[in-house]
Length: 289
Ligand SMILES: Nc1ncnc2c1ncn2[C@@H]1O[C@H](COP(=O)(O)OP(=O)(O)OP(=O)(O)O)[C@@H](O)[C@H]1O
Ligand SMILES: [Mg+2]
Image (cartoon, rainbow, N blue to C red; front, side, top):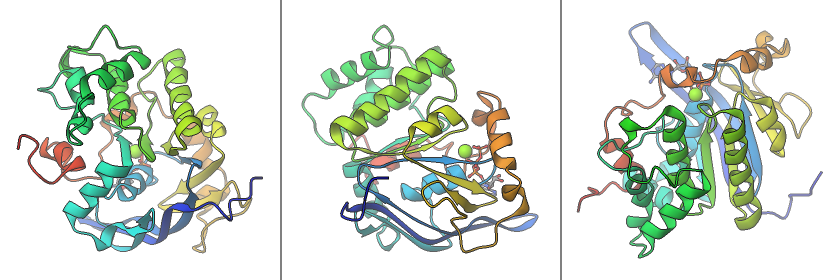
C-alpha cells in the first residue's frame, strides 16, 4: 500500500451531515461523514440507490449547503466561503460530471464543452473542446444540440466538459451510467489517463464494481454513513453500522441497479431544473456578461 503520509490532502471531510425537511418530516441524508483524500488519489464511492452518494459528491463540489461539518478542498474550507467564493474554487479546481448531465440545451455540443474554458478566457477554447470531444468519440457531433443527441452522447459531452480544463479534482457521478460497455471503458480509461498524466484526483460514484476496482480506494456508503473504507479494512465510521451494510446488501443492490435508472432519481440539489444552476456552477456572475 502506498505511503500517502507526505502527500498533501486535496479533500478533507469532517463531521459532514446533511438533513432536509419535507412534508413527512426531517430526513438525515448524510450522518457525520469523515474522510480525507490525498492529492492524485483515485476514490470510488459505492452504495445502494438512495444511500447518499450524489448528495456527498455535491457537497464536495460546494453545490449544496451541509447542515453541519466541513469540506476542505486544497486546504480551503468551502462552506466558510460565500457562493461566489465556492464558484471561484469550482472554476479553478473542479470538473464535475452530473448524474443527469446538465447540458445547456441552447448550446451545441462543442459550445457546452467550451463553456468552462471561455469563463477562463482561454483563447484556444474551441480547438481544445473539439479535441476533447474527439477523445470521447464525438467528432461527428460537434454542432448537435443536446435534444438531438442520445443519452450516451449527452453523457460523453458532459464528460468532455468536465475534462477539458484538466481539473485538479474530477468529481463524476455515475460517469458511464448511460454508455455501452466499450464506450464506458474508453471513458474510464480517459479518466485514469488524466489521473496519471496530470495528477488529477478522481472521485467517482459508480454502481459498477469493475470501475470501483480500478480505483485505489473505495468508500461504501449505506444510509448516509461511510460504512466501509477499503484502505482500513474495517468499518470507517464511528457511527453505528446499519445492519443492512453489515449484511453486504449495498453491494447486491449496487450491481442490480438498471443502467439509466439514475436519470429518473431525484437529484440532491433543489435547482437542477434551473439552467442558471449550470452557469452558477462555474461563476455566480451572469454567463452572458
Ligand atoms: N432535497 C431533498 N429532499 C428530500 N430528500 C432528498 C433530497 N435530496 C436527496 N434526498 C434523498 O436523500 C437520499 C440520498 O439521495 P442521493 O441522490 O444522494 O442518493 P444516491 O446514493 O446518489 O442514489 P442513486 O444511486 O440512486 O443515484 C435519497 O433517499 C433521496 O431521495
Ligand atoms: Mg446518485
